[in-house]
Image (cartoon, rainbow, N blue to C red):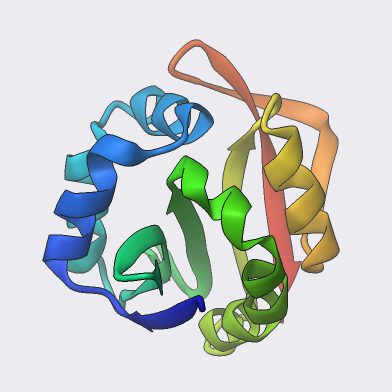
Length: 151
């Protein structure tokens, strides 16, 4: 059974080498590595970092932190292992309440998603995010879409 708990740095070290290929690409395009990116999430301003655990395995990590120049806006994120697909029912059950909890302190939360990350885009839209597919943002030589959810 999938549960969401406060993340520990050891979760980041465990998950980093097992990320989905698309998540690896997104992290690399930001100029980081999976482990560095996950560990950095613990140091961000007003950060909340959560881990999704099933059968004692870290399936995903997610979180939110203040936008540096506008604390009313949050940067929301999620990185996962391929094993996330084995927990679809739990993910769907826990997604909206978790996103609502993470979003609550902000007027809106946002991030970028790789334009080819079709599964995540469908899930994000199901969770209530608007994914603007009319404009792309180049990052690390790849095209990304802006996703945003108002609280």
